[in-house]
Length: 284
Image (cartoon, rainbow, N blue to C red; front, side):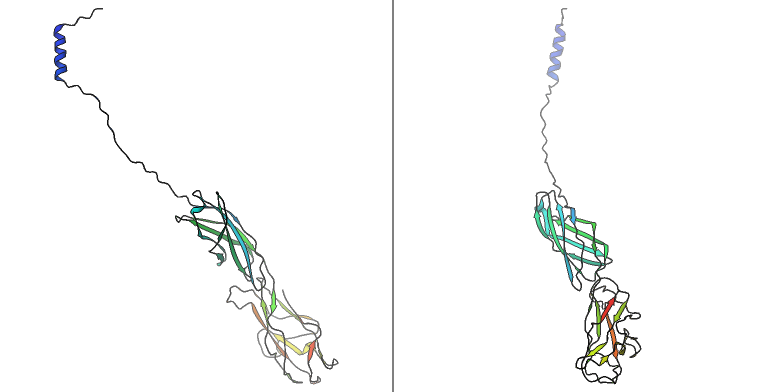
């Protein structure tokens, strides 16, 4: 096929090209910035090791609580000074705000906390252990999913022994030189107190006997002779006497004073009298 273009058409095409400018696409460049924001990750307390508490009579028992903390930003991001533990029950708190790091690992740090409990702290399995630590950015991790047990402790001590001095033969309603006092040194509430007395024998003349029945006792400092009359070798309950445990350091209800009165028979002689069998007091 032969294409024929007339001379006149060629001329028109050339005129068009001369009149209309030729436009070529050029490169366009825009510049921008790149910002990468790195987020600090909060630490995670993933393991807590608790120990049940065996109290010490009249004293303090200290246990170790360990907890492990992971931080994806590295253990160097943890603020050791913020590591602490608080153990609570019924409004009572025992804790340590200065736990020490004892083990470093690429994956975690372990903290050791010494926590002290008092002999009168309530026996329960529901003491809540709350551990906490923060990182250098102030992100805090807490774990309060663990409980520990404070065991029951039944303990009692006699604060003073029973001594009568300068007592005259035939004297009535004589009182001891110091009050006879019991102290609950545990966390168990005793609801009863029993006294077992024994006859006293003369030191110089053992034929002379100061009978246990010459002593009367009560816990209210009532009128002399109005309490319970003791009996030789017999355990007698002191009416209404209880010995609860302390609820705080300032609580004095765990102390119980037992008041004694002595009527001295006129048949005795002037000498010392001792109990050859020790008296006993029982709390239950």
